[in-house]
Every structure is written in C-alpha cells, then in structure tokens.
Length: 234
Image (cartoon, rainbow, N blue to C red):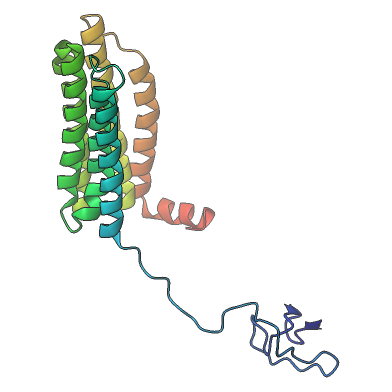
C-alpha cells in the first residue's frame, strides 16, 4: 500500500500518480500493479444529455395505456354502470399536460404552459362536476379559485419576465399571496355560509405581510443588504 508523498492520500495499487495532486508514485517496495484495474476511469467522457422528447413520449405512452386499460376494464368487466375509469382518464390527461407537454413542446413561452395547466385542472374539475351532477360548486367555487390562481400566476410571471431582482420578486409574491389567501377564504365562506367570515386567511396574511415588508426594506437599503449578505455568506 502506498501513500502520496505530497498530500498523504492512500493510493490504489494501479495508480501511477496521485488522483488529487498528480504527484508521480515512486515506491520501490510497492511497485505499481500493472494487472490491477484502475479505481478511476482513464478516459473522461461527458454524460449524454437526456432526450427530453423521448422522455415525453414515454410518459405519453404510459399515461395513455393506463387510461385505456382502465376504460376497458371498467366497460368490459368491473361495474360498467359506474364510469369510474373516466376519473382515471381525466387524471392521466392532467398529468400529461403538467409533465409530458413541457417535454414535447420545448421552447414555448412559459405563460402558455401555465394556462395549459390551469385549463387541465379546470377540465378535470368540470369532469368531476359532470359525473357527480355538482355544477353549483364548480361555477361558484372551483372556477373562481382557478381564476384567482391564474391572476396570481400571471402577475408573478410578469415580474419574472421583467427580470426584477430576487428580493423585489419575493416581496411582491408575498403581497400577491396575501390577496390570494384572502380571496380564497372569501370564496369558500360565501359558498359554504353565504357570508364572509375573516379567519385563518387574516392570520396567514399577517405573517406574509411581515415577510414582504422585510424583503422590500432589505431591497431598498443597500447597506443592510450587504450586511445580510456577509452574515449569511451570500
């Protein structure tokens, strides 16, 4: 067994030089074993990039086959009077839009993918409403929540597209999140009780407001930002 005379690292029997510092191995009492396999590859090779389109096609095939199999099992064998397979097919379609579509349609603007994600979620909820006969909660609760979420995503996407600083984007995000939480509780209360009863959203909004004010103050005070950077080594 040999050790590097420069850095002291333990050397492999087939090592001709130290893998850390490159110092040649010279040890007459323990010569280099020519028959031993090297512990590290001698040829550097880059890892081949993942073919995203092939991965997208693979996900498409998996989701489509799962949906088709469930539909066949539902209609031919188990409970044909209950269309439970449509829930599976709808969920597979939503997962395809969320996971496979960005891989197959690379280079498209990010807002288009966000709109597609929201449309997929709305379609799944509409399917559930149609199968259960519950269009009331869809129009009065689900669709307004999706609309508020779309506005939040559009505003945040606009901030990112304008290349605002990270602190500004984070601060505005917390402010938008506060509005979204307040709107969420208001929609739920109006649907369930017929009136707005402020509760948990106010508590969560107070914490978000503290975070937003802190981030915006740090953004406006360069010396404070530099001091925090030194403290946290950023």
